[in-house]
Length: 188
Image (cartoon, rainbow, N blue to C red; front, top):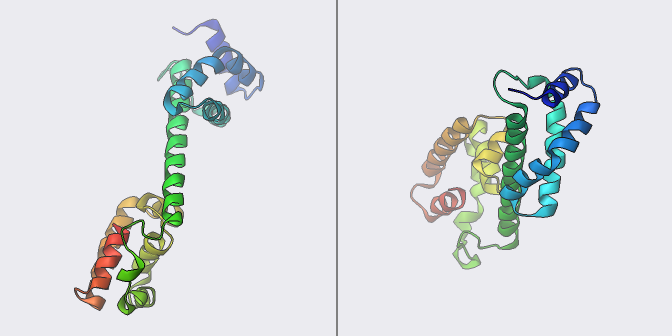
């Protein structure tokens, strides 16, 4: 059963009344900070998460359905998901920074690069564009499959299929040479 305060906040949210945010903040910010902190384990980051959560709450206020969840449950889920997204974002950013900082992040040193490896980018032009775009995003731009999916606006399953087919096409060009092994190691 909802409290009168919750009902009032829900009504204000439905009316897009900014007083709703003040009431939410006054009554739930500390608890939501605790939720965020438990996930991110950093005070500054938790504060950022709470702020982002309140923005999402305001933007998504029309999606709240009291018949599906209590107000606090809805707020909790938004905050928790925002905290998890924040951690993933930081993790992905850290992984990219590591890849950029070290040329042999995949265990490939300068000594293993031979002339047959250098023409990989040029030989990508020999395969269909839809496969080439995916291979370039993953191989040359260092994107993860999920990032490529988001960036190229292609479903993740399609990215995986095009990667597999693209690699098969590259195998046709190179046969079983070391270069395709290098490409496979860097992509997978």
